[in-house]
Amino acid sequence: MKEQNENLEVHGDITLNLMFWDCECEKKFIHSIAENQCTVCKALEEDCPNSRADEVEEYFKEGVVK
Image 1: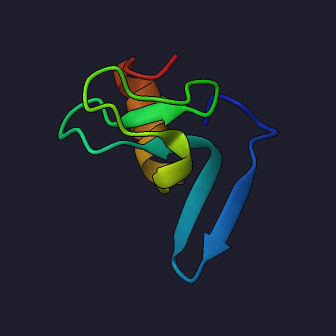
Image 2: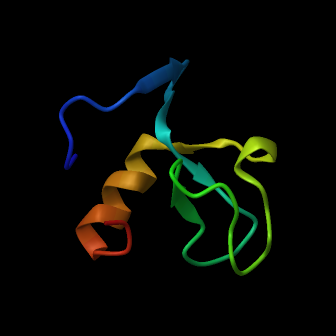
Image 3: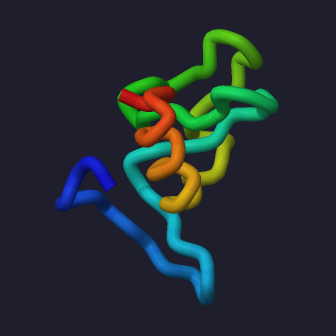
C-alpha cells in the first residue's frame, strides 16, 4: 500500500481500509474519507461501507486514488 500507517480493520478474511469508503458507482467507487459525498451518485460517506484494503491497493496501482 502507499501509506504504512493506514487504519485497517479485519473481519474474518476481509480487511477494510478505514481511510476510504465505497459509493454506489460501478467505476471509480472508492473515495477518501476526506470526501463526504460522491459527486456522481451523490452517496454520502456516512451511509456507505469502508473500502476493502485490496481494492484500495489496486486503485493506487492504477492511479485512480491519489
